[in-house]
Length: 357
Image 1 (cartoon, rainbow, N blue to C red):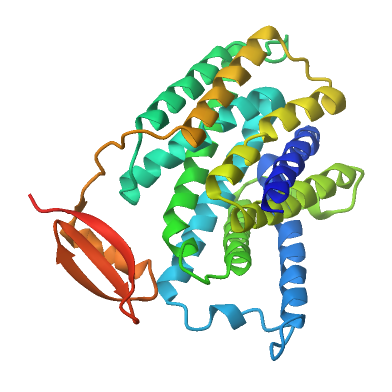
Image 2: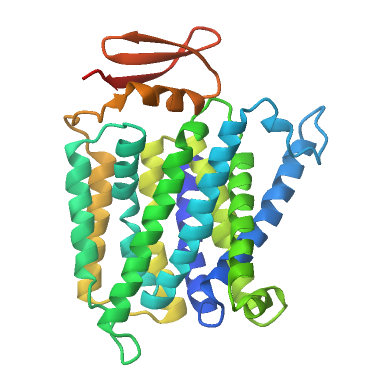
């Protein structure tokens, strides 16, 4: 069942990109992101109410039930993650999508895996493998092949490169947001659906203030007025901002992380197929070559394992930061150049390497 959810996440996200691309012809990226998140929040809150109603002793409207007792630090991590990974990142996504189209954008999107690994190596001291470096190189080759592709009288090489730049910045901000909140998401029993809702709300509030600060705010707010564009923005928002996220969470919950990651990456193929039939975007041999390199890189990073590279050492003063991100940690002991964090029952929940030099 988890594999089906992961595949459905890829399919719904791939389809939503065509709706977002067509919406972007008349809707500003910031306004489109704000609209998408607002629609998603409505459905996420309705889902939380339904889940509460199915639990004995829980009031359907008690949306804070699962967060009681959680440290404020964990909630603030989710807020910052939402601002970075949703408000900023998704706005850059729509700028990129408008500039280069779906079929080029999804090739850049393959850079998510190596960028996320680099952030995890830097911030969380997670281990890198040679396969990660080889896969990352293949993905970068695929992205490089796309440079200059898709030129039209209205779309110059310069505008395409700028669009690819927006796409890469989107990946950087999204990866930073995900990695930053990863220690919180990995806590046993942590409410993922509620956590995702908090990230959405934080990102939406940030977008609202960004809109107020814009000199075009009167024009941007018009996205909430019913128009023919809603036939594109609402399906896109429901597919990409709600369904894809639900399926993504379910996929990682009910199947192995590696399997889910590989199946999620098939969104590249789905997006290209939908863009061909719905938007008329043609696929050249050069673009297919870029897809082959990028997908090969993703598969290399996901499926191959080998000798691990040295873990980036964590300074001793950084241990408290890691400990705060694991809410059920109560004690720590030092042994063989590692700090072992234990919960209230004495079970080890994390082993953090220490730079003792």
